[in-house]
Length: 269
Image 1 (cartoon, helix red, strand yellow):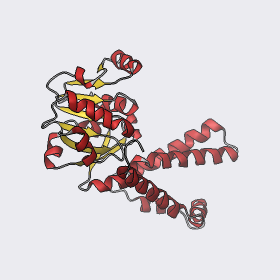
Image 2 (cartoon, one colour):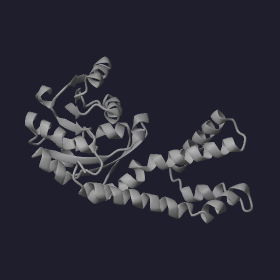
Image 3 (spheres, helix red, strand yellow):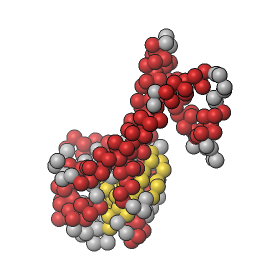
Image 4 (cartoon, helix red, strand yellow):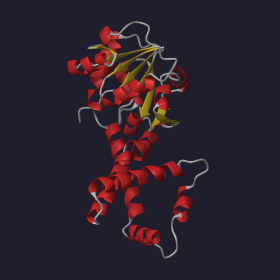
């Protein structure tokens, strides 16, 4: 299958690396208006062009990898240059609904996704929602790109993509804040800066690996490391008193609500 990326930024670059691991994808072309990015893509062996009008015939799918505010123009250019009838079109833009994409494109079998940045490390999490079963079936091969870069999960209701954004789309930032705080506090306690950061990262990644193991239960893992009257119990009691769990839940709800607001806003708002 020959596919096209509309946009050649950071997320697209990560997805390009994953696409190379999907055997069914035989060729990839990228539409990127910025000359410097096209030159970098070309240096990496990727076929890049300035506009959709330069794309070859016979495309099997298109991936929209532009920012939400750039989506109307990108869709208009794609629709003017490519026959979208029966063609799967996959968007990674947050807050840009399938209905809005359909209006701009005027055709295509649309799938909306919510990936997160760890896909750049091959450990991403992507939620996907299709306009209809035909779109999901047609997009099976290009969606393997997201599976090659981490976890791919399906949602039956597009409205749940706002919750997915709060969970995994914005989620890495919560973890980075946790790592920052752990490392900074360890420094203040006297541990050397590089060691503090390395230990914080290793602790979070190690705990995540255990929580992701077969049959693992995070609550049970937490109980296993928490001895009555011990150091962990003292720490967890302090977090509970400070409202850690309600604060995180409130943060996720704020992200979910903002995602819903963005879906209802005009693209240039």
